[in-house]
Amino acid sequence: MASMNPALRYRVIRVYKEMLFMGREYPQGYDYFKTRLHKAFDSQKHLTDESQIMKGIERAEFVKKEIEALYFLKRYRTLRHRYDAF
Amino acid sequence: MFRTALLRSARQAVRAAPRCQAPIARPVARSSLFQTKQITPSLRFQAVRCYSASAGPSKDEVVGRIMDLLKNFDKASFPEWLRIHLANCSQVTDPSKLNAESHFHNDLGLDSLDTVEVVMAIEEEFSIEIPDKEADAIHSVKQAVDYILAQPDGKKRPFIFSSGK
Image 1 (cartoon, rainbow over the protein chains, first blue to last red):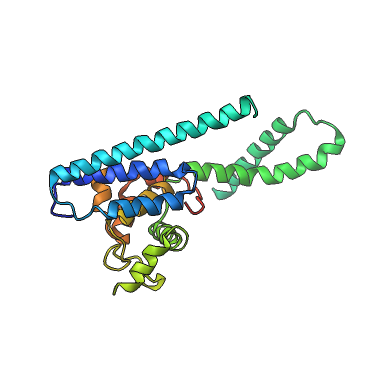
Image 2 (cartoon, rainbow over the protein chains, first blue to last red):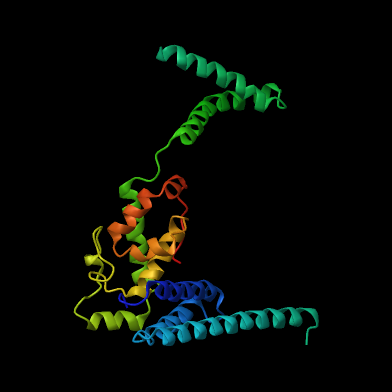
């Protein structure tokens, strides 16, 4: 990992950090999220090809958007439930 | 010299005390007024000393706080599977290996992602932000301590106790 492009390395670390920050409000708890996230990143550590790493980063960004959408949906549902209780 | 300073401060305290106690001018309040006169000087001196003091956390304190943080990291928020995995490795993460010189990877068996988490925890503990490049260069407790001590921003912050995460 040390031999790879440092710019890409920082990008990966930044994505990891951003996702960790997002995971604090994860419904199933931070520890649950962190374990999964760590596993997911760890499973991709063999990648050395730059295009492959870029693909991985894009995938991480996609997952980030999904989590964001999950939070919005959760908030929407909670509010909806409070306004018309059924 | 010392006596005159003492007298002057005492006079000031006497002058200050009635000012804040002015609304209560009844004789009954006299005793409480007397007590505040006793207390206010020390409080005032304390406040003055706090603001003028330039000393931040000492090195020992920084070391202690980082060590506490790592101990908590190991105990509370370390994933179980990772601990088992580490136990299987030759490099075992036991708290006894944790000292002010511990290397995150060599001594504690943390991988680069764990290191990122530790650095994040340190950022929170000292309420500073470590840029990516510097954060990537921190690989041991000693480096973290040196970085915090070299940081003028982090030194002046008051101690804020953060529990666990």
